[in-house]
Image (spheres, rainbow, N blue to C red):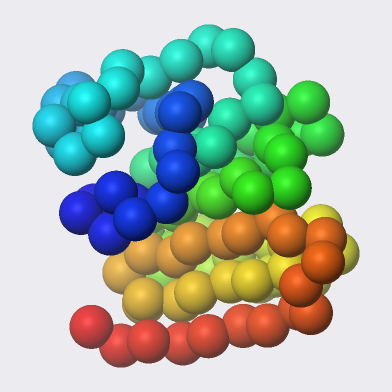
Length: 116
């Protein structure tokens, strides 16, 4: 969570109500979740809500999506692999327990696996 402080984040959306994540984001960024798109950061605990979150009106060129539990179930794994194929997603980072997606039109598509 501390690594998100590196990015210029002004608007945050938490897809799945999670008080602990809201508190962490408030502490790290000094900002509360927002309901005004587009969002700089979208946090999803459940991958099935991710696909509906990544709508054109919710993201912009520098948006990032943080996904928790990407290998928790076969459905989560299948959703993660589907998201990696989306042409809007240019950079993905697989930390095994979680994943991060970036939308940057000017960047070549890349996928990173980092075991932590």
